[in-house]
Length: 81
Length: 331
Image (cartoon, chains in turn blue, cyan):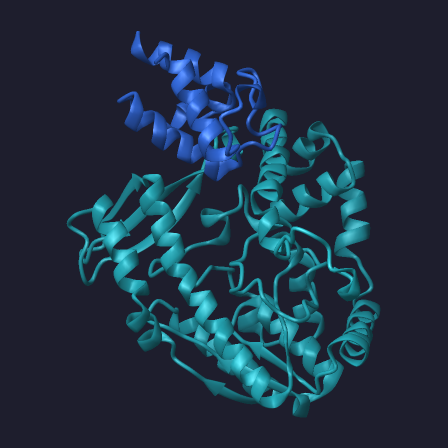
């Protein structure tokens, strides 16, 4: 499964309680759309560190890295380089 | 003076204290008469500025013989806050009781659950160590996250970022404190046919700095519309003891002294009051930056942090959601 699919599935299953792919656009801002609050973002970080075996540094905990599926995918790709 | 600072001075600092005290007391009496129908009030007195002002307003509104004060210390309560609470009780001459909740917290597992999560972060943590949680991120545009700070018996401080599970467990465990306290307040309220007074100021109420079904639970919250700066002004105006008027606000929940701005808010309360007020009147980030003497980008982050906290804590204010409305009850 691609990184994008894993992240999308995690959000759909845990925060939107659906398997309807159309419920989430990969460009949707989690915070602006009210999909996640700041505790939810911390949960996503926990998921990413566990699933992708990365360490998210304090300075990387910014919306540009974490506030949408697309942002997370780019962030993970950068971390893995 | 800068126009925004000038307006803050006029509207928030220089409010008519006598008029405000009269208005609050009259409204409290109206609410009791028409909505609550209780014959007095219970106030948990912590020794902090908010409960002290709320308690004093309650006595002004209803009389000392219609108030009952409770002190609810536990092992992490600071001695000076307890002694300030006692000074207030003596100052107002109100019937009161002290109920130490440490044994209840011990029995329910509060301290064990908290320490279990701390030990996962600092395995060497044991008896004689102290702890607190510190927030980071909001002022820098980062997602708010939490550091665990511990002090070993030699006085050395250690700090690590908390993993989410441990953070949630520490907060969940310490929330027992506010919830046990509220159970005891309602025991006395039920016994006396009194109402329970909640004591948040506007900053705490707006930003969700309270525990649902803990300190967030009450029948009447007389200072929830007042900025903390105004609560301090009323404390002086009402003639409260100097030690209370000059006390630095702490959460009094963790064993290390913990400022509210360390645990929850992006800035100290004086600046948070200004930021919240500026946001409420629709001021721009550049105006706030001038008012607080910070960078415009930081001011933008402070506004964002206010909005984020409102969103994150909205459910704390909400009544339980129903599938269908119950129109007969107006719900």
